[in-house]
Length: 384
Ligand SMILES: Nc1ncnc2c1ncn2[C@@H]1O[C@H](COP(=O)(O)OP(=O)(O)O)[C@@H](O)[C@H]1O
Ligand SMILES: [Mg+2]
Image (cartoon, rainbow, N blue to C red; front, top):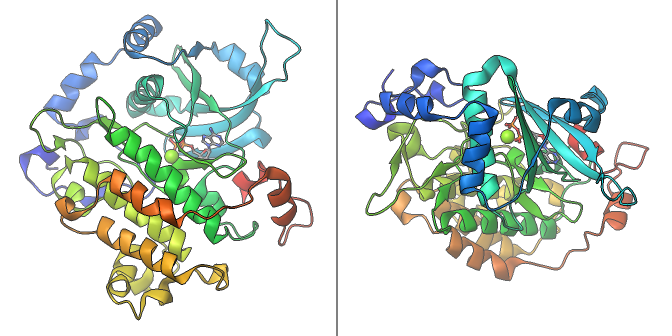
């Protein structure tokens, strides 16, 4: 199979529907060299983390994490995806027993996929150990013991944007909350792109944007994040990974990764927020299955634009703001990466579209009940 840096057209199937499936044999010689340098034992990992980290991280033993998650109880499972399962748990401060235990999310990487699992686990420890921003999820600690690779994050009470936006149980997200999410996630990406050593996130999608109880959006899952190009380089050449339906066309074709690849994925997520449709939906008629292909012709024509509005908004949205949001998505989805806006410009364009929204936990929890007779709490949002 052609690799991305040699100019051959790689198979689209290397990008998976749910991201992150790849075998070591797919890697380029350069990747394999990088692989050999990856630290594998706890001391090396700790050394690497200390030499690059600014955020203090707690090192957990696997036994401690069993206690934290009540032995990885299935009822405490918050999600599962590419490389493992995520459980809710609680950690308490041994030195100050009076403090309430803090809720955390514990992501356990699958042992049977250790090659890619370890690589992604390490990327998260290193990137989230260095970066700190209100729109990035906070990494609290990790475990690197025998074959176990675990990450411990701050708990995000409302789960992923995917679970909220496409839920059949929760009330539809109102316009104001959608714009708040778009703005927060854009600020997170802008921060990464403008960091001293720019970072390309590479897997921007609704399941990787998490929401706290007030619907503040934070990027999580830095397993595929990559250092951006440095000096006069325009791109980094890399294996093609990400999620079909979100990945930029030029990245799929050439393996050339730039911050503008994230901007394309951002455009897809913005479209999902505006239309309430998933980036890929096999249950729809063939011409509507790929959201971008379906929406692009309508985005071009002002008269047809309002056909895109999520019917679940029931007309409760400002038309002008919708048009501006749709135009922004249109520019992000330009096939020419250079013609796409910078994340900073997107943040600036979204600022005037922000409307105050009352997202206090008590009020929204009381209104999220649709079909479920029980009040739906933040945790239930994960299971919808
Ligand atoms: N910090 C967290 N708080 C609450 N839920 C989380 C947290 N981290 C992950 N999740 C849930 O688990 C799912 C998968 O997590 P993610 O980090 O994206 O793992 P994967 O590598 O499997 O994609 C998320 O979509 C979300 O529903
Ligand atoms: Mg994910």
